[in-house]
Length: 250
Length: 248
Image 1 (cartoon, helix red, strand yellow):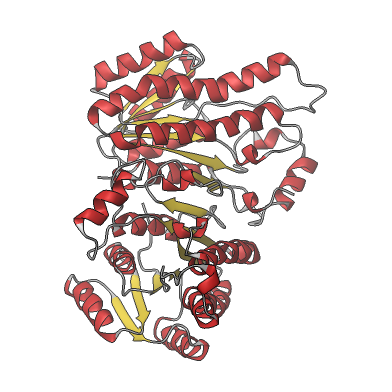
Image 2: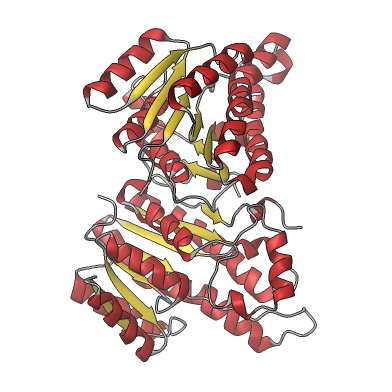
């Protein structure tokens, strides 16, 4: 269903299980995967594992919050592959610094920079390449925290900005056969969660279970597919129905 | 995995989006139930599918009739062992300015688009709950965001969104997801009945500059119907070439 065979797929933010699941999914579907990040050890582990399965993957160590490093890395990828067909912006975090009154300037700026700069720098560098080739799939990963929560104004603001950015960019490039969409993840079970965390979170969801990183990867796969060229500027919530509790979810 | 070996009933599937969706699902290994209101076209569609080696059965029923709907689902469950996927696709439109619309225009549009989806979902859901697995996909429309001259249709499609969310909330804990697809402009024979001036105007509003294809909807249905899409529920997936980003 997600047809990505032979497509060059650049994925940021693969230190977390979701980024890793996306990389694995694309690789097993036959894409030529390139992962970037600043954690060499984590990159090595992922690429070794994917290569051991006989799939195509490469890595670049880069600080995704550096405009210059992103520019150089994209150039290096193009030298090697000639094109970038799919861009998945997963770099970022859901760390929240506390209530608004206590937020420092640095905490505010870091939250926005961590979540938005990599996406912006990568899109700015990659979109012209996609326009030249008249093909592209950009998928930005956001988080349900964008709906708003006490103590998370910085993170919510950053994750909301991804939504506006997605829609604006989608309109800019719609006629170039480039789609830009957003996958918004909800409560996804990750290795560092305790059974108690899981049970408590699951109880609050309509589906009464947490999601898996593969659930997010599946949604990314749908948007990334050769065949998904009529869906752009959209949000898809992978959240077990939790988004329905919030009034902004449509 | 995917939708292989699942039983999928698609209302209004003797033509257009429903037919192509049914075809793609059958090609992927599902057994499809072709439903429409006229027996002749149901039988013709089933014959076509079978001639292509696809697994299909036909059920003629008016989805606005509760008795007929219940009987249809009972038969499907009895003959095919249950129902895994329900696509509420049957729909129609009576367009017109508010002052010109009749009560009959309103009633038929609400009945076919919304009441039909409610009756089918009500009839199907117990079979899904019994198996602890189900996918209900409602084909709404980008028009639910509102469009001049579309009071009954926009209202019915908006109702589908509300119905979808209720189904998702009620059935979520039972392994059943419910989602909406909101198609935009899709190339069908109906598109070509519009005057050229109107078609050009509508196309000029498309960010992608082109129409969608019935396969775009079929792909979205197959994604949401997939066994692996169980964490996506209560959602509206617009397949509209970006038109939903602004309705101006």
